[in-house]
Length: 500
Image 1 (cartoon, one colour):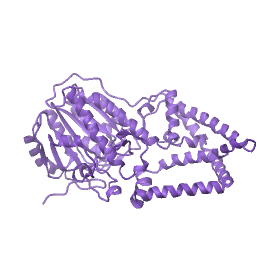
Image 2: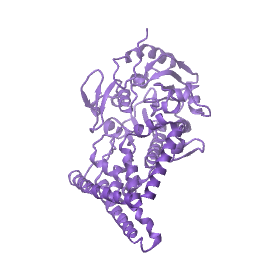
Image 3: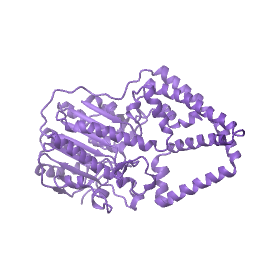
Image 4: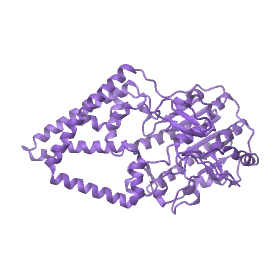
């Protein structure tokens, strides 16, 4: 039972995904410690349950295996991708139908356990007896890791602050994961106000038909950073490998030229705070400072001590742990973003936010963070969208306070739109917001032509070099260069259609 209750943790040790931290020896020692600890807890509860016939109030402990089974089932649902095991249910049943389904399922399970308690208990104990063989595999894997890779290094990898180079135009690029153009601007639901986006729009170049390179983060981000369309990404290798659409052969991402490497070649200090992709491991050699939060993970798992990791691993038992980790990733990136964006020594700052991507971590009605959002299945995205807007305000105020807002180019966009928007109102739209505020700009400019945001790579290099510094220069540049983004379509890509 102890091993299966830690399923979310123990399965990680069998994966080499690039999206996971590089765990230190302490991580595997914590797993072994938790197995011993939970084994003692379950054994004690089972012993109390066997004494239940003597003392009536101890009979509740007879259901200990059923409780362990419920925890295991909660952990096992994470083996199926979130959009499949939740999103499709909501899509076909509707939000209210999904809640009704869960309610009926829960009532049925409780009735079965109440009426067939002994049978359910016997089947559960048999299941754990067979599954107990897995503990041998888990313990063996932990011992192997401790013996073969005891000195794993942490993910953080970045250069010291290079000698400052005067940058003609400092750039802060804020990329919000899953930020949707339609729901943010064109078709925003009633009652939702996004004052920071509206404020920025009134003093920026605002593109109404910006299309991302792909509908998936793993393809879109490498495309944006290299300026070339990526058709495939192998995240099961570390460093992860990418395949360019115009090449056909896979190559390690850390060996490719990116916006970061080209900035460093120009002597520009770059700071990155990112989520999902392993930014520090992959691009650390080209960065002055870097911070990364794993996909539904925690950066402390890289080099935390055993006493820090034991409670973190035990916490995965809780049903809301995925939401909690998402919230902690947001807080960690916000703290780094506040520091990076106000530091004028950084000529280029890139922040990849984990919002408004799910799960929901904010309640816009109560104006507070939360890890319980199941009761609002229809609009958790709107909650996170509201949080994204407030986050823009926090960064703006921090930059204004230190006097760097007015002399910094700020770009706000996304890697893809909300891929599950159909579950909300039945509509789909691939467009993402694109707002580019130039230093000292006070007059809004609306750009309506359709273009692919893969041009951001070249655009920011031109701005950093000082060759583009005004709306009168950037708009003609977009008109001229947006045609260069056209290429044969591949699965997952969202390339502009040729104009007639």
